[in-house]
Length: 562
Image (cartoon, rainbow, N blue to C red; front, top):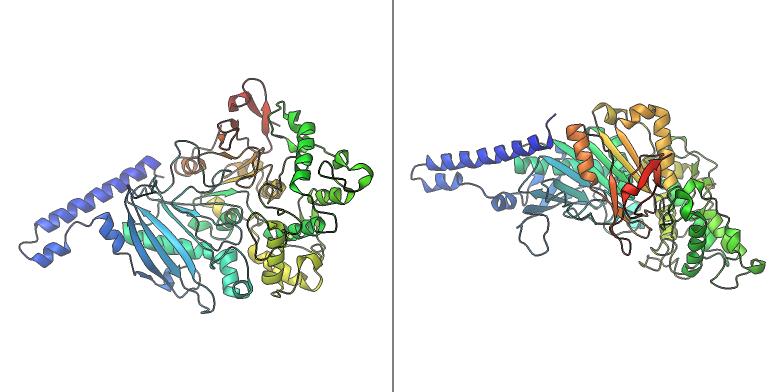
């Protein structure tokens, strides 16, 4: 296996030989102007422009399409305004469906001049509907679109980067999209393979060789896609980073619907002021259990909080300093698992609780909306609408029932009745809860799996449960040879936590794949004020960072403890 340095040298030599060969050929062309023109040395800019209009045959894409086309190829100089990712060719293209009524999959492929032989496939998020910012930072940490000081983008480091819109435009489901079987399959799974194969074809046309190593990095919905890449397309990727993955996406929307029914019931809504009272009471009781009073609950399992300690006198709503009995029922619903009367994909019959009693904040990032009145605004309005409501409501109406007249508020998530079979079918299509990673393991693939303990959109327990099923299948020792799982205290869903941390996950993964160097002694840095710059050790589950003395802002003051 080539080392990373060896790969970089190989590509440098190939590029140099190409230039020398072109110069020699041009020098031997005599006085024929057309011959000289045809053998002139090609520049990165000219090689970029030649890609415009290229067509990719259907046979080059591993799932059914009618081919793909490049709509534009734009050369971006290293000094272009706003560009921090070096010199590259920005390619935009479309993968065409078999069913003419399904939308194209829109794709961006960024081709660096200093190609290192490797690629990073960027995952999407939520309902997708837009192309990820492939010239920027991937979700290899917990602070959205941000990296610690000194960590550059994959594109600047020489990786080909690419991603797609998942096969539709817009960040919500609707009848015209989700009612089409091919479009729904593209969003759920197929766009991953189709986008990869399109990008691989274009990159080979540009550089003359296939990728030496391919990685997939994504968070949330993109984390679900990352796990699908390992489970269903194991031969396409050498390494995966799945951050706070929505692996059980069907159970997720069912649980979100259950919680929405609670906080939208009469008197059940918990506003931001009441949420702050709840968080303050939780922190007061549980913050110091890890040895440090630092605003982080590092070991949530040790935190046993009873919301009745902030109950309003008599149980009625008397203001923003306490919770009524109905509001206590709301947070208790969020803090308990959903059990279903039927099997979801892979025999799963439950969805875990949120860490509402150990640090999760549902009010600062739109999870529950700005108010009971705003929560149900359709289409969703950022900052007002509840994501829990719109996500579950749209999944029910468009992906499941294909009936826009339905409402999640009149639906039983635990027992869907006549819609049960359809829920199960969508679960089999979308969920990435399979533990069958044997092909990925056997080809030497590596996975970094990670979740924040304060995640307000996807409970950390979902990934803990998935990891425990993997341990049951592979055994702890064999599993640790190809998968590392990290829980980060205080980290939320890209923002809204007590520790919005990041680290250079791509380098950790690349070193593991190319050099066999397992991730060890990783440190994560908080990037959000007022605590920006503090560090913590990344502890491999089930360990957690325990304070042992010294500066509480330094990772060296903590050990990974059981």
